[in-house]
Amino acid sequence: MITEFLTAHGLTGLAIGLCTFLVIGIFHPVVIKCEYYFGVRCWGWFLVLGIAACAASIFVSDVMLSTLLGVVAFSSFWTIKEIFEQRERVRKGWFPANPRRKY
Image 1 (cartoon, rainbow, N blue to C red):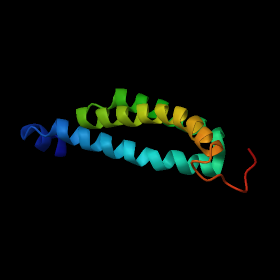
Image 2 (image 1 turned 90 degrees about the vertical axis):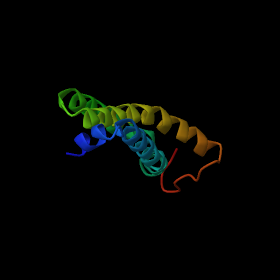
Image 3 (image 1 turned 90 degrees about the horizontal axis):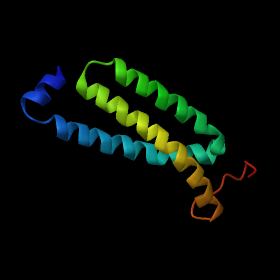
């Protein structure tokens, strides 16, 4: 298994760091797109994803996968805040507004 390889070579921390960086990097454009197409009403999706990832993290025994599920969970919770802040950035004109949606 990959976790055994990472542990044997002392790379677990680096792998978790890289995966955390990638998860955060993926969530950034997701915030922008979700706010553009759905507005702030999509915040509930991220709450459900966060709760599910938290629960999964508790039940997964593999340290690497459990940690990454925790990163996804708390990135989802942070995204809820960012969705509302993105709405304000759109109002300020920093990002384009969806012309088909009323604000």
